[in-house]
Image 1 (cartoon, rainbow, N blue to C red):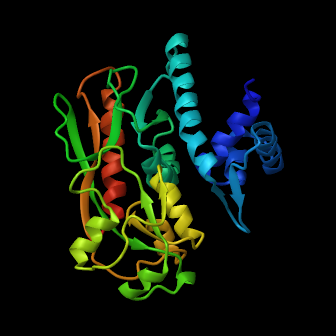
Image 2: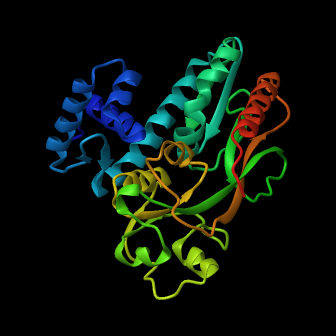
Image 3: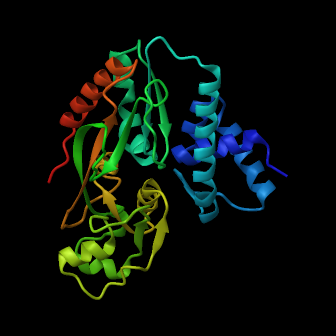
Length: 296
């Protein structure tokens, strides 16, 4: 028997934001209502889905397993309904975005885009799956990687960098301190020689004798950042994704080296009924990237 849809929707929003308060704002209910629906789902499943910390919530292993299934499912429902309705805003723009990039870089900046371009109805489709860009359905995509992207226009936004990050509460100051800390890992769908792993970092740093496979692993890199915020260990994190936490002092980068990564790109076909909106969105992305450069 399936759990009530309202409980699944509340959990998906809370897991995506890692906040009952922000989930409540998105769904136009109270945080108490979100908490009630999540607890009802946990009781139905007989599983804990969140660890409730003093000022935040963190997904449990069961929650981490359930979240991407629901996230992609609700995104798929929304896309199918949009197609069936056949209705588009007067100036519409649909952009496919990786969930981590959307949560940690794009969403905090979108209010500025909406203020500048209130006539453009922007719809974000968050997914890690490959996307078929079809003008009028999905107009553009933001992806991380080396490419190539044959047949597409590629607007390179910025290159990423990766380094160890952790809560200042851990008092990690030198590399030797890693031996007493758990290592936090983000799992990548298609790892290669540029994947930011602890194995690669230790090799670049010339560090030996550390068990680079021990610790906690997450299927979503934003959850590795959340675990680092909770003081659960040290993560190899994107400096793009952790920029706000580093700027506020909630996270620190205790030492280097910093590893180079691939770049984030805006991809589109260069044609279609919403091409003018794609160009406007690309220009805004360039300005935002230039205003928040990532140091080498």
